[in-house]
Amino acid sequence: MAAICPNCHLPEMIAYVINDTGVHPFPCLECSAGPFRSTPHGQLTGATACATDGCQGSVRDEYQYDAKGRLSKLTRIKCQFCGTDKTGVINAGSTPERVMPDPRLPGFEGRRVRHG
Ligand SMILES: [Zn+2]
Ligand SMILES: [Zn+2]
Image (cartoon, rainbow, N blue to C red; front, side, top):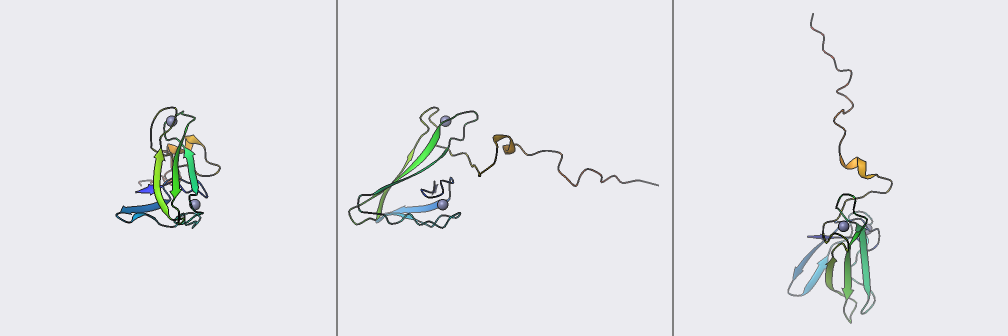
């Protein structure tokens, strides 16, 4: 299980486990932010673009902290437009077109084998 980072807002960067004692997140794989503690009764939100093609909505993860500032609840908020809870993996500066890989990969061009 993984959640959206409340610091850099990249999706699925905060791995976490849930057990009897609560929610235990690991530091963000991208920015190393650790959302395991905050101010008492604090709340953090990670938001990222919805994964649905053409949808302008967003998917969010809300981190809620208890009286001791420990993460007590992690809630995935679905896209308000299409209802998905899937996150689109976005990188700064990338465009949606880059989701489809170009079949003409460099390296195949110009590699012509001549016989004889
Ligand atoms: Zn991060
Ligand atoms: Zn959506």
